[in-house]
Image (spheres, rainbow, N blue to C red):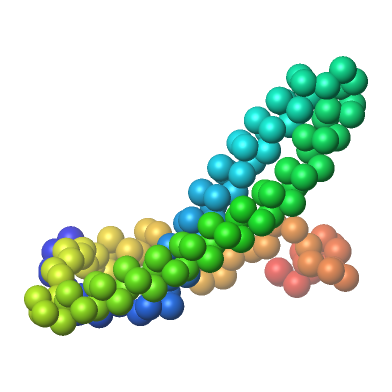
Length: 137
């Protein structure tokens, strides 16, 4: 395994923004679901009829989960563009950032590679097991 260093002098703004946007969307989804559960339980506990409180707590929460996830995604997308622009600006002044990588030899990759002809576990559409046995002979 050979180690080498690569200098990164620029990142793609779109790819970094999409990565940070998706990361923020996942975080926003988790936060929204937790807030939804909290709201539903507090509404249920504060009403005399459990079903009415549960409906008042669950109904607006679904929209909040969807809207919250979208808002977090857009915020993460904007932050990703800003981070990318700041990295590109800073990297142009500094000359880039060094990243260590590993280069695996062909001997080490061979066991992970699939054989040239692999047999399917399941028959495909329109194919029976008997037809496959005849084709494999």
